[in-house]
Length: 329
Image 1: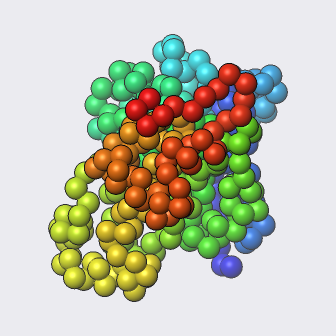
Image 2: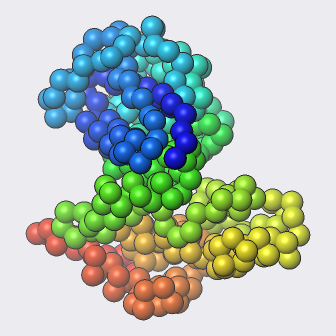
């Protein structure tokens, strides 16, 4: 495949989560095996090595002040970020790098670094579900979306907990090279394997067909960004400025489905992710945009042949002391 070189800078710091670096890095590295050309650089605020959360020393390739302009800047997270002010040197480095980057992404609590650098003002964003309330307090002008795997707002991307950095990197890869390559990399990295204890893996960027047409991608982003909003045919058509009939034709031609069925598929995938994360079925229905538990139950019956509660019981963790909550908690 034809490819141009794409530079990726990863901003690291003492206490960084190792998987926040290695997860996306493996996605880009694996993509290179299929013809992409991602060039990865590790950047620290002063060019010095850093110590990761697991104690591994990570050398930096370059000082942030001397770094080139990257096509993509990735800011990793760390356990200390939600509970304390971000080091000014780190936020200053993030701002300087972001100002020169084509797009900016954070993994997990790396969103707190973007927030401290003023890069989330007036934007939509997410972070690890345990820290979304803290991010909302820290960044009052930011619309924090607690249930998103990742959020795209313009050229700024934020992602949820550590493994969601892989989902985000796959989405960036798909944006650069299309869904076929993203699916190849996902299969190679076994994205759909079950998590330890049997909890099912969820990858938002690869569930269901990925639209190629810009208008259909706008529909996808609108539903993923706010699943509880009105996404009926008339509302969707008005949002993307085409007639309902034309929008329906576009969906049938490219995805062999209808807008209504596609919206349900996105909401269904979100509901599965919420159940996987420990929400009860009533909560999952409300947060993913289904009008009631009964409508969610019918969707699960159509797609999986079992109820949401049965699904959660089947895939819940088998760790000692754990239990699956019922539909009402």
